[in-house]
Length: 149
Length: 149
DNA sequence: GCAGACAATATGCACATGCTTATTGTCTGT
DNA sequence: ACAGACAATAAGCATGTGCATATTGTCTGC
Figure 1 (cartoon, rainbow over the protein chains, first blue to last red):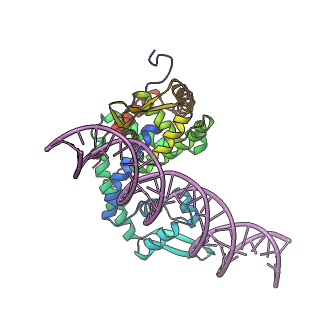
Figure 2 (cartoon, chains in turn green, red, purple, brown):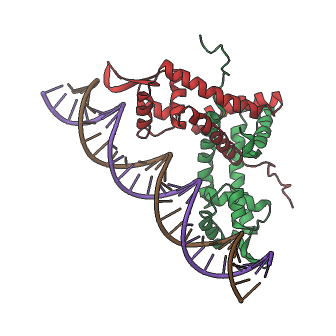
Figure 3 (cartoon, rainbow over the protein chains, first blue to last red):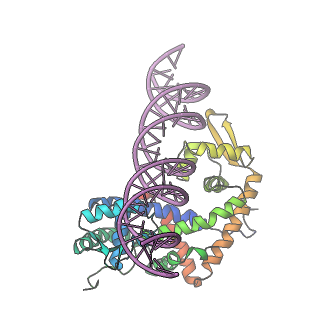
C-alpha cells in the first residue's frame, strides 16, 4: 500500500530549502572571501545600500543578526572605510550608519560575482520556471514569521 | 545613476533562501516537538522511510549530518523502537538501519502536521506559481554541490 | 596469521550562535 | 536636577556544529 492515502508526493519544503540554502551559501563564501568580506559584513553592506539606518540595533534586527555580535563587524567595516558610523547630532546615543562610495563599489563587485554564479545555476531552468521561482521565493522570504503556522 | 547598468533587480538567492529556510524550520520545530522528535531524528526517519541504509556513516552523509554526532540520535530512536539497528551478519562492523512500523507511524503523523502548515503557506500562491516553485526547489535542492560554481 | 583498512564509538578543540547581564554615556519626563 | 529608559559595548554561558584524533572490534589481502 504505497502512499495512496493522501501523502503528498514531495519532500518537505524545509528538507529542500535547507540544502539549497547551504549550497548557495557555500558557493557565495569563496566569492565573498575574494573581496575580503564575511557573510555578515556582506549582509551589512547590502542592507545599508538600500538606505541608511539609524541605530545598530535596528540594523542587526533587520539582517537577523545579534546586536552584540555585529559590533566587531561594524568596527572592521568602518576601519576599512566601507561604512560610516557617526553619532547622531540629535541623539548622541545612536550611531547613524551608512555605506560609503568605496563600500558601494565593493558591494557591487561582490554581488556581480554572486550573480554570475546564480545565473549559471538558474540557466538550467526553463524561463517560466525560473521567473516563477524567483517571484515566489521573494514573496515567501518576505513573509513575517507569524504567517508560518 | 540608480542601477540602470545591469544589476538584476532582486535580492541574492541566498538572501531569500536563508530566511525562508529559517522560518520553515522554526515552524516545523514545535510540530516535531509534539511528537517528541528533534530535527535530526525526523531527518533520520525520513531517510530510512525511503529505504534501509547499510551503514551509519552513509546515513549521516546522506542527511548532511556528522557521523559522530548522529550516534546519540540513533541510540534514542532505537530505544524508543522507532528504528532498528542490527549488525550485518555478513560484516559485523556495520549496522543495518531500518525504520520500524512504529517509526513509520510517527513519521507519518509528524509529516502530516508539517504538510498542513506548508499547504496553508502555499495556498496564498497562484496554482501555477506554487507548482513551478516546488518543481524548481526539487531540482535545485537535489543538485550536487559541484554544480554551484 | 598478520598488517592495514574500515565501521562504530567516544572525546576534545575551535568556532559561531542565541541569550543574558552589566557598564557607560545620553536622553526625556517630571 | 534627578530617576528611568535607552543605545552601544563588553563579557559570560549554554548549545550546536565541523573537524580531528583515538580506541575497539572486525574484515580482507597477502
